[in-house]
Amino acid sequence: MTERERIESLHQKYLSLRENTPEWQRDGEECKAYHEWYDNAYVFFKSFSNLLDDPDYQVFVNANKSGNCFALEHTYDSISPSYKVLLLKTEEMRKAVTDTPKTKTSKIFISHSGNDHEVVDALVDLLGEIINLSDKNLFCSSAHGFDVKVGENFMDNIMEQYNNHDLFLLYVFSHNYMRSPICLNEMGASWITKKDSVGILLPGFDLEDLGNSCYDKQSISVIFNQNDSEVNHRLNQLKDRVEFLFPTETKNISVSRWEEKRNKFKAVVNSIPEANKGDFSEVIHLEEQAIVKPKASIASSVSPGYYRGRGSYIITFLNQGRGPAENLTVDFDDVVGINVSLEKELFPIEILKPGQSFQVIVKLAEGAPHKIMSQIRWKEDGKEFADKELVLFNK
Image (tube, rainbow, N blue to C red; front, top):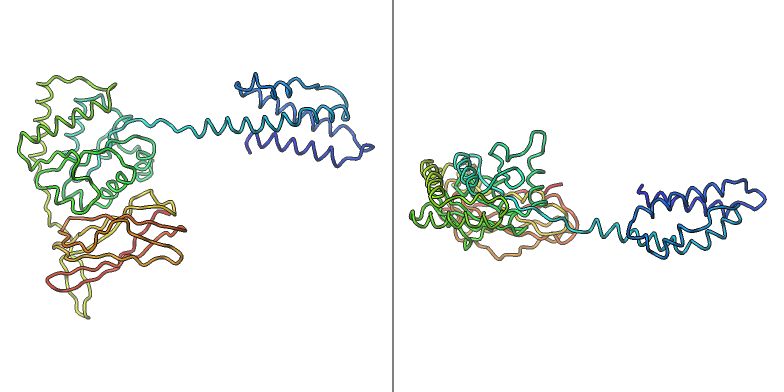
């Protein structure tokens, strides 16, 4: 019970005694109830400094506080309108404070696969040459001091970053990244929340390997498959962007030192073996009563933490197989009473290569389902395959 609710409860107690106790049976309980209500209301209203010059406040606090039950009735009748107005005013003041949006602090979020931790460690070192890093302005799940604290839930912590900070996303894209549902969901969550982002594409990974994901391929990207001068140019742009976003933490690194640290970072990236694009597990399907082994295998996942019943969600579909899926389509079996619609007309997808993914926006119009079933169909070498994929939403 809030203080406001407690005071109103005392108010109703006084009114009940006043209205339901015959005059010849009054024994002072009514007076006690009046003073208990008035004294608590007096202290409550006095805690709002904006009320000190308010005329209703002046009427209430300057009321006669003495007399028997009959005298207090007359006092109450004179201050009751002011009391009701003051309740409304203090509630509006409370809402004005609680409804004021909190200022979100800027923070770098490095979205990456744990298999690329060597590159990520080098990236953190490079960022540390540009700004003074702390857990206040950087989150990176594989870097000590910038990761999830002991005892904290990983996914809850990820969503805390999205909800409470103005994030600048640095994607470390690789085939490892595209095979990770968590990574793809981080990408979907940033798309939903419209976070500023830059992609760093490791050697052996190109923009076409992003498939139909929601990453904006027209945004600034550092692509290590490009020539050295272009990589330098893009890393310089990344430096300028970080300095712009964190002006108070900027170190003002000299040109010569920046070039030295930039080249050291490139050397680390280029020394890492390229991830094997076709390193996927084999899946068995049934077709026409015969056991076959399709090369493609389509799995789905939904953006974490965004299940709120009615609303829009990103669902990522990933080819985890060894070969491409051709003419791929997806339909959804609606939950009873739930209207599921697709915002993007993506289908059919002509080809979905191994490691590539695509993302669709699913709109839940009414209700709050915890799951929907997707029907996935595709072709390989002229043969048709179908599978059902259960898409689970957060409960």
